[in-house]
Each structure stands twice: as structure tokens, then as C-alpha cells.
Amino acid sequence: MGTVAAVTNEEIYENLAGLPVFSPVMKRLGKLQADPNSTHRDFAELIRTDVGLTVALLKLANSAYFGLRRAVGTVEQAVSLLGRQKMTEVVITASFARVIPSEIPGYGIRAEEFWRHNVATAVIATALAAHVGREAPDIFTAALLHDCGKLLIGPMLEARLDAAGAPQGEASYCVERDLLGMDHGLVGAVLARKWRLPYATRWATRWHHDPTSAPWFTDPGLVGIVHIAAAVAHQRGYGETDDPGDCLYIPGVAEGLGIGAADIEEVCAACSETIESLVGAYQAPA
Image (cartoon, rainbow, N blue to C red; front, side, top):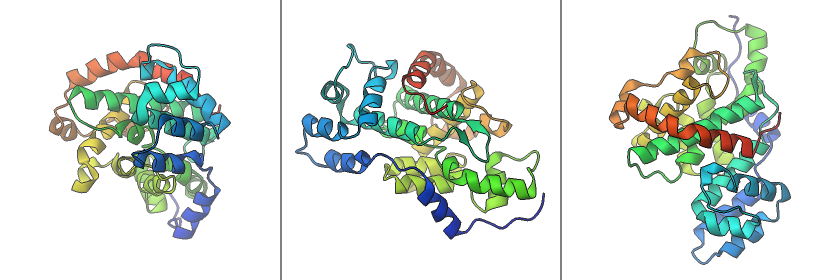
């Protein structure tokens, strides 16, 4: 493998500026959530300002994951029936799907497989947290976006792989560190901040490959569950990968959270239909 220059801050910010942005609704949504006097009507009026987001909201709200007992036909119904937390998950899910390119540069991952893996990770992580009785309201979003850094780091990685050649036998995040001086977790935390995503998402993105290094204030338990869920999703065939390391999680992390092999089996058996429903409800660009 040849020698290549590490990524500079200027290169990161240049690529950051070129990425699609989340819907402007996201910024205003956060303000509404923080306002105790905001109403369901306020939320509905805000979401309706983005037609694409409105369509996605209704598709996702009617998926099996959200478990509504009757079909949702209007934004007002969706907001009322889902509640603020679930509605925010839907908006972030729809917004994320809209910024995924048809193929992730540097990784050769097709959009539909990238989407499938991230959705599966989110569903499995949420179910694992509930299974072990852990309060983690932001875990769905944190898990859904754990690999978002690949969108930013991909073009930089592709350029250096072309120049240096692809190393053999290394985990993908180690290759990133070797060629770029950073990995998609670190860069993803920068991107999550730009998109004004919750702190839990920034932490899970930053540390999902290395949860034992997560500082105490980042909620290492949440990070650990995302770490396990991402590996299990790959084990179950949710998403393309040529890296065997993607299918492995740190056993001590699972043990520390009280998650055993039987728990994972039970959760995955219960999640498969939900994952397929949510993947199909809103496809990323093909």
C-alpha cells in the first residue's frame, strides 16, 4: 500500500459543504419539542411545509414498526397517534433516507443495502434496549444513523484507495484510520452535529466500533447496544459487507449490559417482519 496524505480539516469541511442537508423542518422541529406550549397542530403545520417529508411521514407511520391500530391518512392523525418521540423518529428516518446517494463512494455499497443495514440496526437496538429494560428514548435514531459518517468520508476514502490500493485483511474502520487519519465514526459525529441531531446520535456514531473507549458522559450503555445491534444486523444479512469484522461485537460489552446469545436470538426472531416493513415503507434511492 502506497503512502497517502491524511485528511485535512479543509477537505472535511469542503466535503461537508457538498453533502445534502436535512430538511429545514428538522431545526424548527427541535424548537417545537423544547416548547412546552407547542401543540400537535403546530407540529403538523411545520411538517406540511415539506411535501416530500409529508409523504414519507405517512408511509412510515403506516409501517408495522410503529404499530398503529388504524391507517393514518393525514399529518394531524400521524402526530396525534405517534406522539412527539415517535414522530421525531419518523421525520429523522425520512430525512436520512432522502440524503443517501445511489452508491456510497469508497465502500461500493448500494443505497438499498446501506439503508437496509441501518434500519435493521435501529430496530434491533430498540428491541434489545426494551428487552433488557433499558430506558433509551433516542436509541432508534442513534442506531439508524450510526454509519452516517460513511456519506462524508466516502469520497475521501475512494480517492486514497485509488492512489494507494486497498489493504488486505484489515477491518474497514482500520483502513480508514490508516489512509485518512480518522474513521467514519469520528467524521459521523461531525456530520450529526451539522444536522443538529440529538447528542445520543453523535455519541453512538462516534463510538459504535469502539464502545469500550466511550467516555462516561456519552452513555456507554446506549453506545454498547448500538455496537451490538450493528454487528448482529450484519450477521443476519442486513446490508452488504466484505469485512468479517463488521459481524463481530465485543463479548464483554454484551455481558456488561446483561445481553446473552439467547436474548439476541429472541429479539431477532421478533424483529424480522418489522424490519422488512420499515425498509419497504420508505426506500432509499436505488
